[in-house]
Every structure is written in C-alpha cells, then in structure tokens.
Image 1 (cartoon, one colour):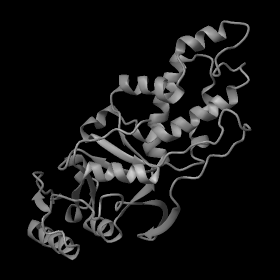
Image 2 (cartoon, rainbow, N blue to C red):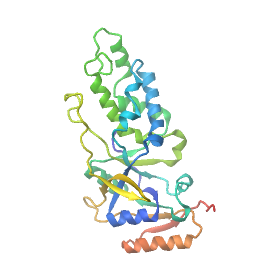
Image 3 (cartoon, rainbow, N blue to C red):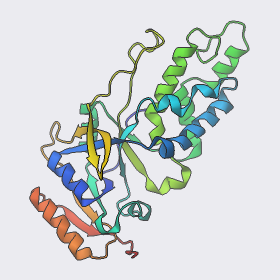
Length: 286
C-alpha cells in the first residue's frame, strides 16, 4: 500500500500527558491495534470480496488466528481537529488534539521504514483496494485459470505457487487491514503511521519463510498497571530539529481556563511559545 501525502497538518487526540511525552522523547509510539474490535470487521469485508471475485478459494485460509500471530502497530491521526466522536473517547478533563506537520511525518516514515497511510471508508473503494492491492490478481485471470486443465494463476489451488500466494495475501492483509474502516466512521478522516511486514524471497524461498523483523525495535511499557508493547519512531530526522507542532486544541472541559494553563505550562517547558492554543466548539457535557 503506497504512502499517501496528507494535507497539513494532521491532528492526534490524546491527553496532555501524551503530548508532553511526545515532546520530551521527540518521538511517536506506535501501539498494537485491538485485533478483536478494530480488525475483525475489516477482515470480514475482505473475505466477502474474495468470496465474490475468487469463488472456490477457501476463506479458512484468511483468519484472524493467522494474522494475530503478528501485531499491527500504528499511530492514529486525522485531518479533523475538533471532532465530537474523538472527544468522547477521552476524559473531558484531560483531552487535547495537537497538530503534526505532514512533512515531518513523511520524513519519519521514510527514515524508519514505516508507512504513512490514508484510511479507506467507502465500500467500493475498499473492494477495489482488496482486489488490486491485497490479492493483486485479476478475477478474470483467476476465472480463466480454473477453467483450464493446466492452472496459470497462482491463486488457483492447483497451482504449485498457491501456498506461497496465500502467505503473500495474508501479509498484504496484515499490512492493510488497519486502514480499512467502517463507512459509518467516514467523518473521522483518519490517517495512520503503520509498521509493515515483508518476507524475504517470498516467491522463491521455502514455504515456511518467516517475516522479516519490523523496522523498529519492539519495546515494552506499563500504563495504569497494564503492560503493552510499542514501536518508538523518532520525529527528529533529516532537516527537522524540533517537533513541529503548530496548534493544540483543548477538548470540552469543565474548567477551560485551567486546561489552557496546563497546556501553556507543558509547551513552555519545551520552548514552544508560538503554538496556537484554541478551544473546542463542542460543549462540555457534565
């Protein structure tokens, strides 16, 4: 899935502590998506496209059990800085969105082997993406192969490359599934920085070739007593000598003045006096 250069800027929703952590460490943390809630719906959609376009291919070959062997690491962003559905996910007393320069995000992706991807919501676009970028085989080529005595398509179960083709498709699902979103969430206009997996000699090596390691080291941390793994991606790369945040939006708050003061203090610690601090237009709900 190719990187898609987004508009400038993109916003990330989190706590003020999250912003301070990014500024202190000058990096982003890519965490593992919830395989059960974030990915199952997308997998069901992909499987429905495969059922339609490639009849006869067993859907048992594409399961979360297989994909769950490898975590999907990503960092979420959006073009929308003041979105009610995003504020609802956070404590209203401690919710902020803050901007990132798309050039800095692209440089981060290019220098760390990550991908900056635009999420897809429209069902027709998701179906086309599944065929053209996940399976990467024409339904017509597949149909012609299964009608012939000698299979010509690697997705034909009789073809000697079939097992490797299934592994390749599962790899493509793994790398893309986090960007195929429910059409009902279209208003979120999300982008993701994602870690993608490759296989060495996928078409020429042994059938049990393991995925190459992720481009960044997997680290561990504890939050609220719960341990989790993450990838740390440096924001200071190339021409960028500081974390380029131009705006912070304060979410709906019972005490907007205190929230603004807290934000100003965090930015002052990091010598970012020119950051625009604005307030959400969404009313606080006690």
